[in-house]
Image (cartoon, rainbow, N blue to C red; front, top):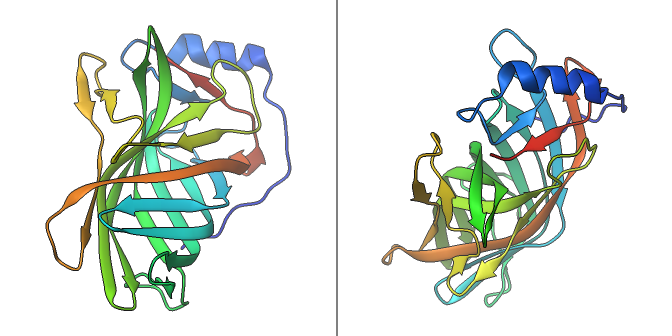
Length: 231
């Protein structure tokens, strides 16, 4: 896993971001995170961490005490995610869970891509960070769980220069609270749902509850501030 990049803080003036916004954002490129990271440029690297994360699926919940990872932006709207769950346990079994490729008990590596999308929150649009997961395996003594699909959380704050971003994932019934997001072209909606499979049984709806917060945001080797823009 790529280690978190912990660098000092620097400031990007609002006028500079306004110029980037005018030059690069259209209805097709919003929602987005500015400044631009793209081909020929160093990627934006966002270091994240959380405390407790809980996966709910079927009759068993899996909980990690903390996690740490990075988002590596490859454009205004998408990038790569690399996340390591730590001190992970199946709550009913009281058994440590370990990923297929992990060597430390309780550690589970998560890889995938992230996308920045809008979603309807009542009468207004809000920005979500959605993650498309490669299948994640939790091996917990007699329990084998595979989590896959898509999960979305609200990304805040919006429309303000910030050094700190928060992604909040909440459960609603057997699903996550946000399961419908605008598509890439902002012309319609599509589902974003998490799925789980326990011990080879039928795949069921699942959910993840957590709050992820930034530790660092850097580009070209220097710390920066970001601007989350909705449609």
